[in-house]
Amino acid sequence: MNITIGHLYPDLLNLYGDRGNIQCLMKRCQWRGIQAETIAYELDDPIDFSCLDIVLLGGGSDREQMLVCEKLKEIQKDFKEYVEQDGVVIAICGGFQLLGNYYKTDNGTITGLELVDLQTEQGDGRLISNIVLKSELFDMPIVGFENHGGRTCINGNKPLGKVLYGSGNDGQSGYEGVIYKNVIGTYLHGPLLPKNPQLADWLISRALEKKYGKPAELAPLDDSQEKEANDYVYHRFVKKDV
Ligand code: GLN
Image 1 (tube, protein in one colour):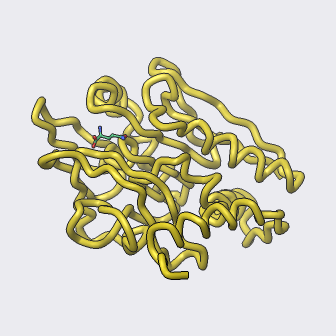
Image 2: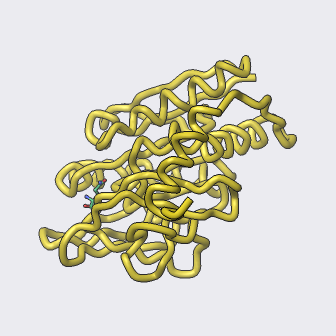
């Protein structure tokens, strides 16, 4: 078995160590004997989505998102087809915003990929905090760090999780992120995946299932350190009495 990860525009969208998410996916595949390779795309590179199993769209500043958004128009049709055919995507912060219809900032509106029906508008001040979520997908909480000026409305879509600590999509709804088909969008940096191994494995299993046509049983890994770190954050911010 093998997995190919497409990393979109790491030279522009790579805030807060999103590259660590790639390392995590690669390692968790390799430790199980699943071959893994990553293709990093620069803005002018053509992208053949049919050879990708997981796409990572990382975080970026408003300025970088503005630079990327013109390019996105060129790949929109192929990317949309990939998503509709159950392609796996993990989109973080600026990348999460770009999945949607638009991101309206004080300096102009950035057109999104229109892959998921959501939109973002810049609000007063930035939402900066450690953050803890409870997601229906996992028994472990999802932990991370958020830093965004945009407030995202996910319309009728499913959130990634309920906010137990922190601000989330808009600081008001009590929810964070989005799940649409095999796409996860989230504001959590961190990097996200080493801190949340169950989320990393969800992406890998969805990718294997899509590629090989049957539910993937992933061999368990020793996640004791990851669990300890996750648990520490959970108790530090949510369950302080234990
Ligand atoms: N520029 C976006 C915002 O501030 C996203 C920032 C990020 O990726 N951290 O909302």
